[in-house]
Image (cartoon, rainbow, N blue to C red; front, side):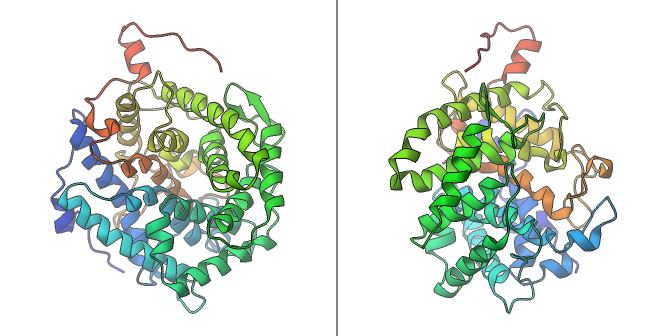
Length: 403
């Protein structure tokens, strides 16, 4: 299918493209352009029940047939997890308002297409282990946009979404960050007023707490790994689960202050990991998620929960540098606008065996602060260099301290 070019949209053309010396306002326009550049192919195709027919499946380990069972739900769930905060926001420029109106409708139609058993794009929620992962990202996205992606859904789509998420209960999650996928789905049922399994939530929350290693960092299972799973999954989903379920148990509510403090510390560490050129240490698995490595820092910015010593405009500048360094790299997108495997361009060798095209869309989570209004200090304050750029340019900077 020959997809229309992303930049051909008349409404999008009203948003001027920012450059590296961008102002606060053009930073927002630049972020929105990239978010929609990533999300538009997925939602445009899925809303027409053409995602399976049109999305390429790149699987560098030669396992296309296997990953094709899961890749479409990966692309959709992860796109929604990143796009949802912006969809939930009201206001902004007339061009942004019009774009948001269009993508809200595409997102709702896409949900309907993904969960309707009669749809050409009905997705796999039961076969294999992977579906529980991306059903959880889909649930997380809906939790981030309760008005637009839940209340505004028609009754049939609501019922079918609930059925699809319930179907994942047959999947036993691994003894790792995967516990939070099951917990996130149950937290969604709690939010929706449905019957939910408090035991799955309690087990995940308490087990993750047992794996806390110190200074804002959890183990991914009993052991510590040098990777970005504290940001890809652990902190953001743990926070979302507790937000949904804490009102139902004082025991969970009592855990929140420590868990929030750890997340705040990890956000501070993440900001310091951004190098002066916007690169960051290429450590651990799943590097093909690119900017998804900063899911937690973006989440804390969205929730106005950054460390006191980290001004929001400084976080914006650091994340903008990461977006430029990764997503502008030649080869990041194919000729039809779909993401390709890599961290900085097209680098299929960086992929693990579970990586395919749909996996890559976790990069959209870096754009969560677009859920803040344009007059929020994150967007409205003048740009400020991030920590490593200050230090490595010789500027005096405060010392870092452990939690």
